[in-house]
Amino acid sequence: MTPPTPSETLLQAIHHYNEGDMVQAGQLAQTLFNQNPEQAEVVHLLGMVASRTGRLDLAARLLMAAVDLQPQQPHYRLHLGELYGKQGNDEAAEGQYRQAIRLKPDFVHAHVNLGNLCFSRGERAQAMAAYQTATQLDPKTHIAWYNMGIIAQEESDHERALHCFEQALRAAPEVALTHTARAFSLLATGRFLEGWQEYEWRWQLPDNLPRRTAQPRWEGSDPRGKRLYLCTEQGFGDALLFVRYLKQLRAQGAHLILECKPELLNLFQTSQLADQMVARADDDQTPPAFVFDYHLPLLSLPAIPGMFAAPHPTLPESVPYLTADPDLCAQWQNRLRHLPGLRVALCWSGNPETGVNRYRAAPFAAFLPLVQMEGISFVSIQKGRPTQELHQHPEGAQVWDLSAHLTDFAQTAALLTQVDLLISTDTAVVHLAGALGRPVWTLLHTAAEWRWLQHRSDSPWYPSMQLFRQQVPGDWVGVILSVEEALRLRKKQKNHRLEHSHG
Image 1 (tube, rainbow, N blue to C red):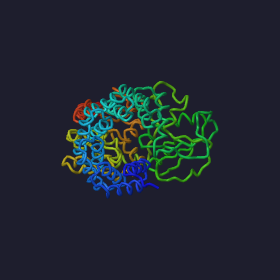
Image 2: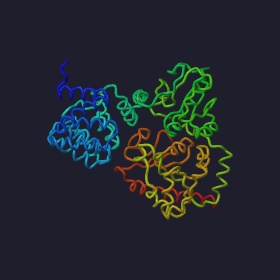
Image 3: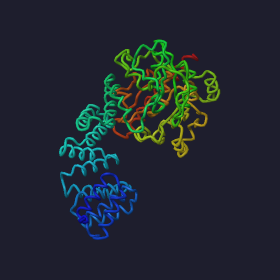
Image 4: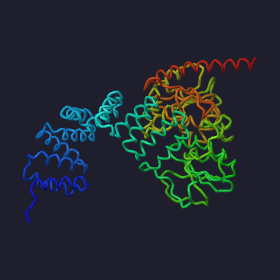
């Protein structure tokens, strides 16, 4: 039997690589390399195998050697750029992508990678230009259309985002991430019925499996006399927002079992949201230990036909739908009794581990003009690592850090009943304040979530909420200037009321 030629062996090695068999690909490529260490294709393949198996330093040396052997090969430069990206060397990665484009101006993959790199650095205009070039070269470039849609969302241009997502779905109709992003823009523009249906694609996302049960999912049949198991999902804010629908379900005669995160249990029990309430930690995969007829994730409720009583997602008379514990309220009244003037609670960041927080969060330093205002007592209800910012500024000493007392949402709810106002970025506590009917000013970045709709300073979800929006991405200074002006008026109004009550 005639042994394979080097060309045939190389083709076999590439086949194994494409099939994910790095061992066979590496062994065959190494054999060829031992025979001819100057063959660029072999050196390149060895570099790709090293990259796929996590040996990034070796991969970098091999891919650089391949580029040296064939400097006019654009694919080698593309892959070297991707390797630099894995190593966190964005400048070197960009250089290789641009070289690849210079060598092959119609290299769609290189334009997309350059766009991705600019996007990750927050360079929206440069990213958009790269993506537009990619889609002009190949209108079926799904990822470029998708990312252009995300950029449009971040700039609060949801009509443009919808156009981009529709183009992306023409190219790749079954991509759940695109459907889910499209749902957000539909909801942000008030197209609720269509948006909720589209949002059901979230269950096709990786690592987002719904709770598995033997009982069927509730699809909107008459719930009277049925035991309906509802489980919260995603963040605390989502749970606080969507439990408003439970009152409507109970009025229809359903027996509700509500499962939530432990931090919410006391608050939900005090608010008497369901007939039975249980807590479940995120990592608890045990089957439900109770009997029920149907199940449904909480955020799927609005997609059930007939759940909407009006074009708006809620009616003002449905708020408040959460209740603070009277005993805890009395404790907080006593704890805060010495605070003079207008009492204002502050929060500037959500969970720093979530990707969206980089847009939502403001630095505590942005709040300093407010903290320095006279006649106002500030308390911080910020939790987690961002509380450190409070103690890094001398002015932070003027803000009473209450985080140690806020062990769950029931405690925070009780505190909010004892302050005049909450000022916060888009975090779970604004939903808590809104659901309690407490005054809350929510500070929003330009890429504000769908639930705040567009171009509004009020919220149909929460009648007691006022919205302060960035006009330019990242411009918290302008937002705080507006808040400062409104706060001066709020303080003046309270002083006026006090003078009249004493007069």
